[in-house]
Length: 102
Image (cartoon, rainbow, N blue to C red; front, top):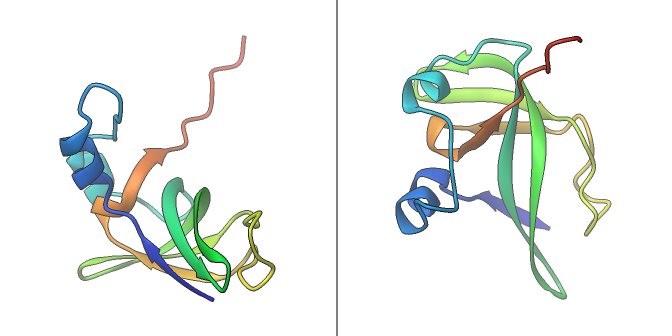
């Protein structure tokens, strides 16, 4: 099992009316503990599977971030919650924002 992360900026350029991503400055300034959504393209024996999954930011690197997967994919048990994930700002397609309490 292998995976690659999709480039959210590229998808946004290709489908600007339907594929929104957070502004670059927000994706460049993530803090530990923030929750971000990434698109994983997972290669298995039966083919490729694409899943959008949440990752908790653990630390900032020179050119990106290290985080841990916050959920399990549906297509495999080889990649699990807690797995280390390295990613860059262009991979971030959503930043979780807690809804205000009523």
